[in-house]
Image (cartoon, helix red, strand yellow):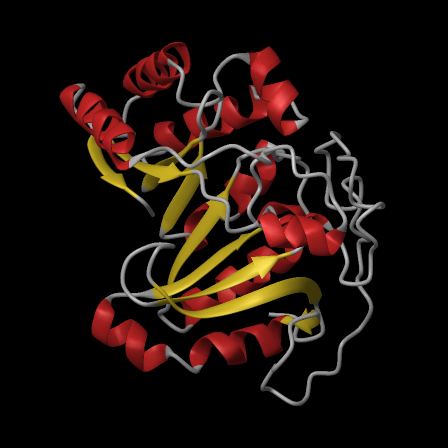
Length: 286
């Protein structure tokens, strides 16, 4: 591990219970190539901590490398001391791992570990790979929460250090995916097929956004795709919520979901029952 390698982190959440098994520490890495209308972490759209909301407003759809996606190959150097990080920002791998290791006792007792989320953690592929490797060297269970919009080689490079992929699957129709996320879905589907083909442990996470992702056509298409792909039998249905509305106001970003209400419990249960009837293991929430 290069202790001087740095990455941009916008939040470190302790005692997380919705980002993989057990009690976890979730590190949220900055930068995302998608612009989902319902994004609940708009502060993570920025590639660097000091980037303005206006600079982050338009996605760069080239998924060739982290540099091409708006993150410089080398972020500004961060001091390797102190090991405790009270405010996320530009951190070294050493600093981030020190934060994660503080909860090692809880990992051991609960079967938890470290989850890398975002934004899109693969936007900082080199930093992510180093952090994952450091976790596995310390016998810490690892999970990566990804939208899958990245070069396949980036995913393949971390296969041996990721215990669990939490993989977002939003919209199956290419035009709809482009409209509501800002990018095509070909890479998303290609990478998910690759993970299934290599028999990696994957939980498919479907955001349930009223009138957008929960339409009969999209729900049927998701189920058919997963059945045809194989090895993808667990689905988590994530209900849209309005908790991020204040963030959009604070960041002066357009909230395209203003006025949209979360799906009612009976709708979520109907979807859970429908997917279960197709043979999937399903739960509501992460």
